[in-house]
Image 1 (cartoon, rainbow, N blue to C red):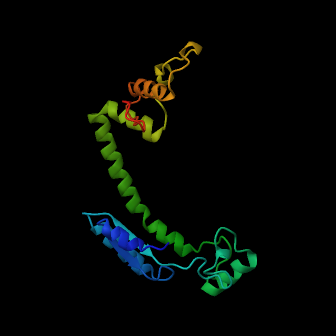
Image 2 (cartoon, rainbow, N blue to C red):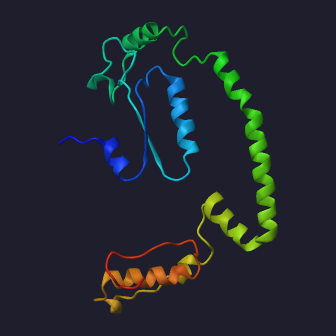
Image 3 (spheres, rainbow, N blue to C red):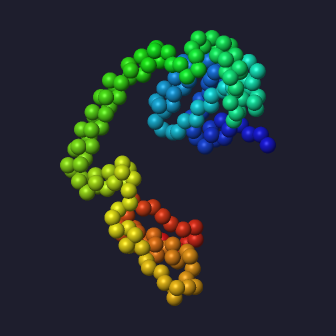
Length: 188
């Protein structure tokens, strides 16, 4: 079985972009990302052509570079082959400099978010508390267990899909973020 994934996504109406040398052409990758962000009317698929294990003199483009460590000798040979003058796990200061240069942008974005969040908390205090509980603290609401229907041995014979329906409906009253349903057409 073979297929042209790019053609399939084009048929879906997506924008499809290609980077032919994902191993070396960083500018082409940046250009594709920029173009994808500029396209607001449909999703984008970026196909980046790479060689697995690129740079490894003995394992590039083979299954040996997938899912297993290169090994110390091959890692050293790969660094030499790529002209990487730094040791294992050594990060050059120039890399840190690039990341530090973006820190002020990140701080501005954080400041804007904090302002927006404070305004939202003031305008919608209950929804803000709910968001904080769900998305930040990742906690279920107080009383959710108490909302569950109680089962006894005498309830035997009730279909599990009906129990599921009862549970979803009961929890929905205390857990407004719940999205649920069932594969059959029973209401839930």
